Image 1: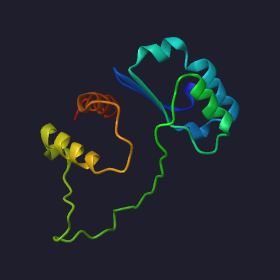
Image 2: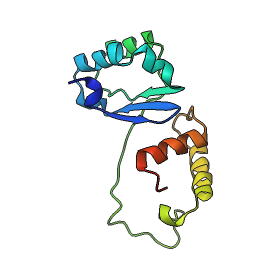
Image 3: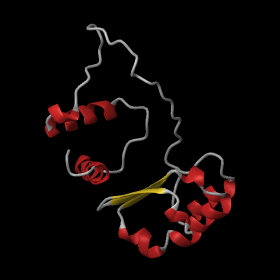
Image 4: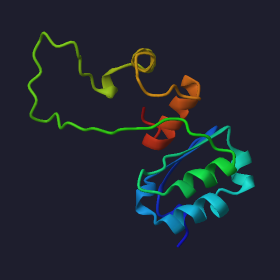
Length: 141
């Protein structure tokens, strides 16, 4: 089985994102970098992002750098389950269903949140990001 078949691949017109590399062994990750990320694939997109799991050795990063990739960001994921949280009326957060918010309001909110984010800025324009979100979630948004 190819490494690409084991991971999550998000594909849009302008970009490709490869996620869930933690399911790969080091050998499989090296196969992905050296063989499956072919020149044809690299030239097909404006932007390719590979989320490299922290358990891989330095040789994986070096191999990606040799292929023209560069270190963009280091990510720390944290999570809190909100099912049992009580939201008070004095809260600074307003929860809204995506089904009840216009696309323009969603984009404005997204841009506002991104502007204050500690995450590295996106290399994509808002419309490119929205096309990717629509493709990933389905056309219903």
